[in-house]
Amino acid sequence: MADQDLPPGTAPDSAPPWEDEAPESETVERDDLTADIFCGPAPEPEKAAAPPAPADGSSAAYTVLARKYRPQSFDDLIGQEAMVRTLTNAFATGRIAHAFMLTGVRGVGKTTTARLLARALNYESDAVHQPSVTDLATPGRHCANITEGRHIDVLELDAASRSRVDEMRELLDGVRYAPAEARYKVYVIDEVHMLSTAAFNALLKTLEEPPPHAKFIFATTEIRKVPVTILSRCQRFDLRRVEPDVLVRHLSKIATDEGARIDADALTLIARAAEGSVRDSLSLLDQAIVQGEAGQTVDAGTVRDMLGLADRAQTIALFEKTVRGEAGPAIEIFRTLYGFGADPATVVADLLEHCHGASVAKALGPDVLALPKDQAASLAALGAALSAGALSRVWQMLLKAHDEVRRAPDPSAAVEMALIRLAYAADLPGPEEALRALQSGEPLPGGAGPRGGLPGGGGGGSVSARAFQAAPRAEAAPAQPTLQSFDDVVRLIDERRDIGLKLDVEKYVRPISFRMGAITFEPAAGAPHNLAQRLVARLKEWTGQPWLVAAEGSGGAETLLEREKRERVKSREDALAEPFIRAVMDAFPGTELVEVRQLAAPEIAPAADEAPDDDDDDD
Image: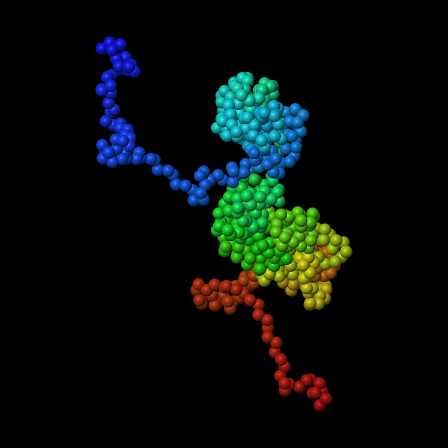
């Protein structure tokens, strides 16, 4: 058929209308007028099942607080006022650096600040046509794309995944090209310390003389790993840890906005556990909000259980008992905490924190402690009662205990031993007290034994008694003894029941010379380095006069143990030389002489009917 013979509206080479039928697989469209022909209305087309709506009625997926409350302007940054002030003045005067280095611990806002800087450099609106850090509250033309990470002129990179030199060269090849839309081409490189040495070297030249349209923003948590050649070409900003009180106010505001009820002490615990990190604190707040039922207040105990912390009031009581020298109650408190699941190393770390808090409160007052009022008052009272030297010694001993607990096969036993050591050392005088006592001729304090129920040893002397106004001793001071020989010294030590000193003197002291107030001896192998000092302190305390005890190199006599051993050997040899004993041992083969004892001869009283010789003379 010719084209002119086709029906109107039919294209050439097209199929006839009667051959244009729909395939069997396609659905035939029907209207209401033809519904009766097909025996009923047309079936409804199948629809995809809609996803279930969230329980709270919201249409969007839940966003964690750390992302939901990420700062959108420099005014929202908390705890970084110095950096914000510097950037504000720099942008206002047009003195904008070409490279920025942001450093700080995790969660203080390095990446957030980098994105805000990228927005500020390329900020543009209908009214503002220059870089600005003060107008970011009102989104500009490029703000949304930069925030969402899809702006063509702002490249945000992770140095951990692009650390090789060839990748850095590929990146720098695009620096010379002008930006497509924005004012500056901004390169944000996170964790820049992960770059290799070759990559840093490739970056140096471009960073020193960049094109005017390029800006670099680096962020790192390990500033020491960044070469100084890179640091010298950047404007550095150290983002500080956020103070606990600032963090508590921030968390309280967010909790109010979220409609959550959280106790102030619980927020303080979260702020302290975050260690100055805003992101960590928001993550913990997110976790704390779901700890309580709807409409209930989340208290400090619930948050403490969530964080796995020991009860701070109990650890403060433990610290107080320890510095008082009460070893028994201190161990009981620790075992209670350990039974509730407290980690031994964490308990020692809490004691370190309390020692630091008491020292700071002593220097600056209790108001500087970010603790509940009753706990801050307890630590301030301890700081006021103890001297700075005593607190310093407790700190050093706790540091050593913390290392021992981490290395010990039984951490709980290591903590108990550390508590006993601290309690027994509570009465030891400091160097200044010992020197003052020696100069004044007063007896050195200490050595009364712990007041906590554990027998023996030192502890609980003058320092703790003066600090906590313990009751004075009721017994009268014994008469000062007079010593005529070294054996008298040993007998005095035995009478005063200083078992440790007695054993050391018997085992390690080889006397050379003795006179009242002076002893010279040769120390045996393995002798404690402080044996002479201990002997001086005890003799001065017991006799009331100063003593000079000197350790010489050689020339000493036998120690008491060596003399006793020699005498036992001689007594055995003398006994074996006795004819009667030899005869007994020959009569009973295999008999061994185990011990030789010298028995005192019995005293025979005179008979009652015996008359004295004087009576015979009278007769």
